[in-house]
Length: 209
Image (tube, rainbow, N blue to C red; front, side, top):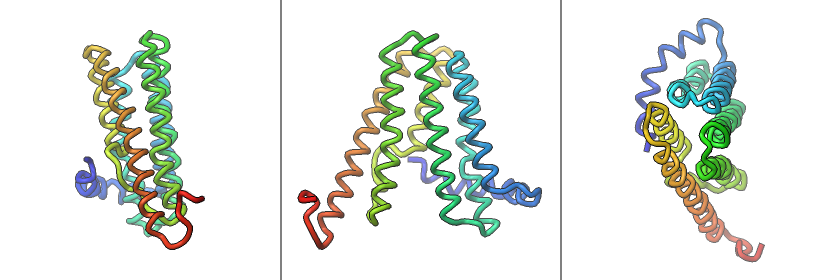
């Protein structure tokens, strides 16, 4: 859904990327700093009920998520390490967002159903990228699904922010339920895609392994 924004974000952040490189800032430093900031904000703002502030700040950080990649390309440092670091740090940031919501609904929110849904989104949000990474690890592809990372983050942050502004919390409950369902469907889609590719390969049938 958000793939079309990547070209626009690249054009917007390229001047900033070049400035940071001239100042001696490395892509890895931007990756780690952005992740630490997102984790700190998520684990402070959401559990303490500052839903709009947390969503707004993390949303801004998500929009700059491509900055480190632009810097790497501009400096000629693109490579497997940068991709690995970026993906790993993304998992920390994603987990912190949903952990923050779990803590809010377990405490101040006092909503056990939404807490369970947020926890479900946390777990499935880890399985979705793992399925793709594992597929690529065995030489196949699983870049499919209705709930990509950027889509999930935009939806949950947008809704959380508006709940912080007064929208009924039940809206967030519904959205988290739908995100959990979409994530589960995405996992199934990726498994089915990998199965079809494995089935087409010469050698033992995947059902026999």
